[in-house]
Image 1 (cartoon, rainbow, N blue to C red):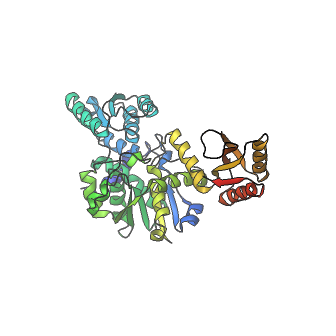
Image 2: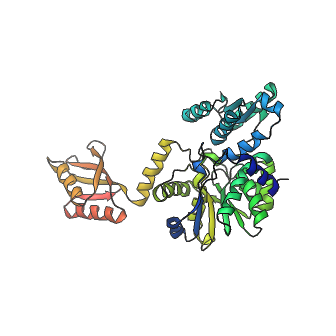
Image 3: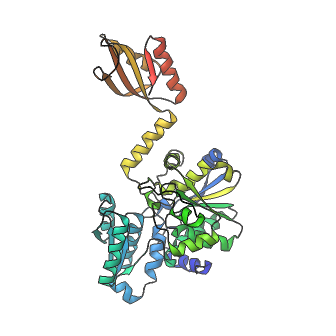
Amino acid sequence: MLTLNDIQAAAARVRGHVLDTPCVESKTLSQIVGAQVFLKFENLQFTASFKERGACNKLVQLSAEEQARGVIAMSAGNHAQGVAYHAQRLGLHAVIVMPRFTPGVKVQRTRGFGAEVVLHGDTLEEARAHAYQLAEQRSLTFVHPYDDEAVAAGQGTLGLEMLAAVPDLDALVIAVGGGGLISGVATAAKAIRPDIEIIGVQTSRFPAMVNAIQGTQHPQGTSTIAEGIAVGTPGKITQEIIRRLVDDLVLVDEGDIEQAVLMLLEIEKTLVEGAGAAGLAALVRYPERFKGKKVGLVLCGGNIDPLLLAAIIERGMVRSGRLARVKVSARDIPGVLARITAMVADTGANIEEVHHQRAFTMLAAQNVEIELVLQTRGKAHIEEVLQHLHDGGMEAVLI
């Protein structure tokens, strides 16, 4: 059974090999959600994830014989890089099995740490099965991403650091995939502060741990922007710890996570992946639950695909009214487009895109539809633009 002593021993082993990352208050986020919010910046680790802690603690405890044979792990992301990096640092051969769909940048980064990357299978389960086969065939030690006490103990070291930095926290809100992080943190935190509240957060598209612990039947999806916690099969060891020590598990939606990623980028100027924003997403979705409390959040990873980040930023701008699509109907005569764009400019909005539509419209043949994508200051500004177009004799609607 995982104990505080295990986590304290892990802290001694990883000291100097992983960062004791900052844990500081965000005054702006605190004002927004109505709780005093403290952020643990695990996205500042060398591989931009807390996964280094568990990987390091596991690898340094291997016997000389196990170290000589090497290790193997299955991961499409942060665990792969954590194992590969610390194996390289310790002089161990590491084999990382990744599904074939893994983005090339993650494959290249893992290889960059000296690991042998094997691409196999179209799903995580197929890759995991192949990793177990290779482990047996080549006598490699399998390093599980979460269902391993040494790994969970390593992850729990950040819990020690958070309570050392802010001893009077009322609650810790932790993202949950397979459960390694929350198991380690809950074990450490509850031993030090039995009254502290531990809340786990899962995405509604991958609610496996919630279903296992609460006996619910939430359906499982196939994809999520929080791919770091997209785990279909919760760990057995971690499940037992969560059942015993975690006070509650909650679900958040994709939109909540998108909003939290953007808030952290705009307010804290820090980049997190979807899983890293899950804790803040829970505070945004359930503000009454945390109102007036001192809450610790773990920004557990910062490895986000740039194209996904671009999409999140753009969708966030649409939600806030800073990006809008307006359809204007007018007589198709020379100069009408110039008039419309001049009227938009009069309001201070900026035109990002123009689509001049003649054929694919139900309007009379003499008329034209013009779609404008506008950069605005917010929803009130959009209304100002529409009103100015109406005053100028144009039919204009937000689409």
